[in-house]
Length: 269
Ligand SMILES: [Fe+2]
Image (cartoon, rainbow, N blue to C red; front, side, top):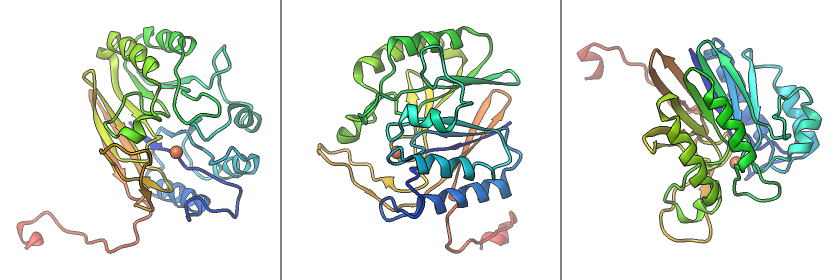
């Protein structure tokens, strides 16, 4: 099974720029690339920051752009989104009984769980008791799961960026919950940090994907500002093969030289 993970597309009103980059053009290229190369994907998951300022025209443009990818798409919201404005434009979106954009998907024996970590008008994340209760119900169901969040659910050792992760009280509670179900969590995915990341949390593998727009440059020294720049964007292709998870980073906007080598010894001379 193949799943595509895309994040932090930061759409503004059409015609505008974000950090000097046209996010609509980037999204169109990402969609074009995955349509050409990965049309067989079972799902496309866009893990939040669908827009830069929750502009209604940005959500309208997203709706229009989503006509292109041939695979079913699952949307999540991020700190730059507005839950109400998003739901106004995507009224068919599944939400939980408390109105959070928590939803899930059964694909074969695998359950994909999409978690809403947004607290309005702040950039750090929240996953309150009500949301944890919802997640616990999902995790109680039989079968393996993949978990998707917008925010990074643990601190990453980048002091400035860590101020914008899931808040520390919720991190601790969520960690305790996930440890109970460690055996069935195949992988945790998030966006938010605009950085290619991988690691483990309490023994559970996680990874973060870059934005389609601007990227964060890791800064592990104390600072009150985070550096970023127009580094290569990408999306991720997740291959689920039996009990294994393999994740490829796809540099869909690369315009430099590409050399094709064969596998014979002489091909690499
Ligand atoms: Fe973002």
